[in-house]
Length: 297
Figure 1: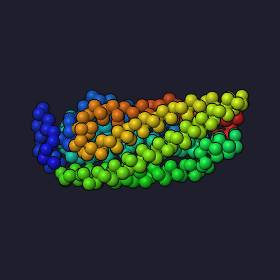
Figure 2: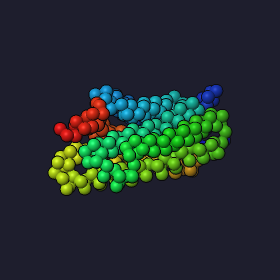
Figure 3: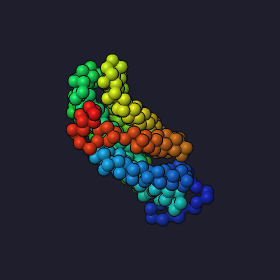
Figure 4: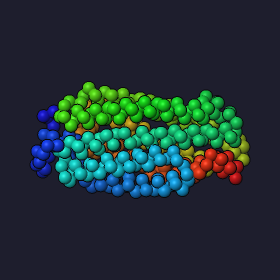
């Protein structure tokens, strides 16, 4: 690990926590990472307020993701201004930013389970049985179970990479664990998106044939489309992380920050913002009974 980037404009303090190189492969941009820190902090406040307002508790996971992203990008700011060689700054941000989006995925799974429950309540089991072959509970626990496995793999992989990096050892072997987690999540999320799109297509078809269903579906359709777009953004980020991890900690993608900004920071910020604008709590929040009450209003 003695080969790597050394910032010519930032002398190495050579402290007890400093590596001999800048492990990022670059010195993080203070402006971009500060902007991300501020935005994630604001999104955390707004999502927390919406969660309380709508009593949509599953989105506490989005709040957790925003908190992790805020702390992760704050550490990148510290790397930029205080010490880009500091191993603890790199390890902390790498772990937090890598693992945060899995909580967004889990919250989206709960939303789709809510949508399936609402579908059954208003239209019987037809849309779910034909499009999904899942009951709402089995749908939820299938994807949540997969997400838990992916999360464990990613947390383990990111943690071991951090441990190896902190000791200035080659993390190539333990990086395979992170790759496995990201690959599994990519496949799982593609399957999930397929299920969600099939359900939305089925519900749209029912709405076209039934004027009452069209009224009920109108508000939910926009929210569903927003969730689909947010899901695609999370998937884009996950695929990027998979390719980046496959190249290794010092690969081309991981050592050029503009890829990180364009394909990690931007998609997740956009997804979180979209879930604020079309918060699922507006249609499925407050209580289980409101799934029926609000739909029939």
